Image 1 (tube, rainbow, N blue to C red):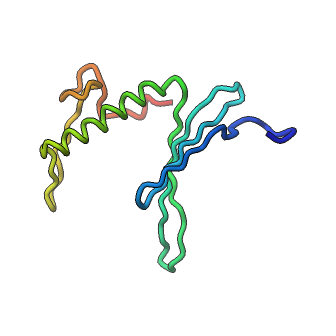
Image 2: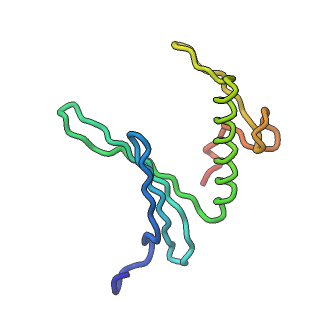
Image 3: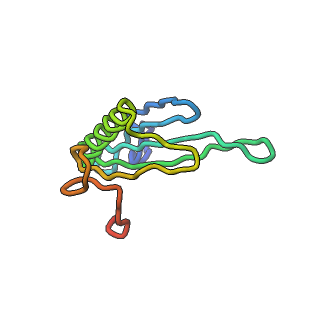
Amino acid sequence: MGEGKDNYRDEIFSLPVRAGKRTYFFDVKATRANDLYLTVTESKKKFNEDGGFYFEKHKVFLYKEDFEKFSEGLNIVVAKINELKDSGEFQVKEGEGYERRNYNQNGENGTTGGYSSDVNFDNLD
């Protein structure tokens, strides 16, 4: 790191993952207190009407106290997607929606004692 450079938000490690038309960037960074955190950035190339392009980006910050719960939730959701896809239970018909279901943190149907997709953003800091 350069002399006199502020270490805040310096990238420690970066992993770009290209997935179709999108690129995901997994960036490990350090806070002023030398705690590590992760940013996940989705970048997608978009085109203007004049033929020019720009990159649309969405970013999520994950802090060390949330790594385990986030990882657990991601694993449950990916397993549920694979289960629904493999079972043929989930199908979207043209012009129709899909049935929205909530699952608890064990991936079971129902919302008691676990995760729900109904989030009250007023409670978030």
